[in-house]
Amino acid sequence: MFAYLREEIGDVVKEKTLKRFCDESPGMIKWLEKHGARFKGALSPYKTSYPNTQHYLYFSGSEKAYPYSSVAKPAPRGHRMVYDGFPGAGIAKALLDGARRLGVQIVPPSKVEKILLAKDGSVRGVEYLTLANSASKLAKHEKLTRRALNYQITLPPIAGWLHNRASKNI
Image (cartoon, rainbow, N blue to C red; front, side, top):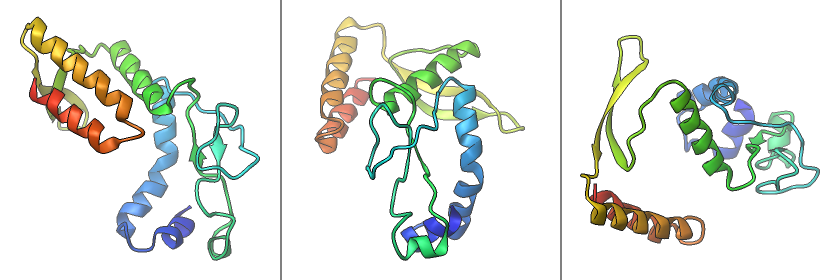
């Protein structure tokens, strides 16, 4: 994977960072699965930038094309989570459900400002801001967040602007 990605992206990412990504990515899939995400190995039989819900593994770049195929054996490296909607929402849901199973207290709508780590690197808590118990502020936040989701794919700058406005309410 490293040889292919180095050829594909050039020097856009530092070698040390790319090496760490390649070395740790299999463990990240296992970590996501441990926390509720599901993946399948059904390979897409055609070239696609993103497979449909019948296929979950795909060639995500130019692995089969020259010069990339000359530096690394082509292999499908793209993974799509098993989920009926947008997979990003599925991963978020799996991680949220996993956190709840671990006893994490969820306080919506809140914004995490800082992650607090124990000496061993595990998370021991967070510092966060949350909406005061104000029905009008909560309603405004929900309205802006809902509108932002409508533009997430088609107009990301507008979605970002709406998310920023919603966050200022917190």
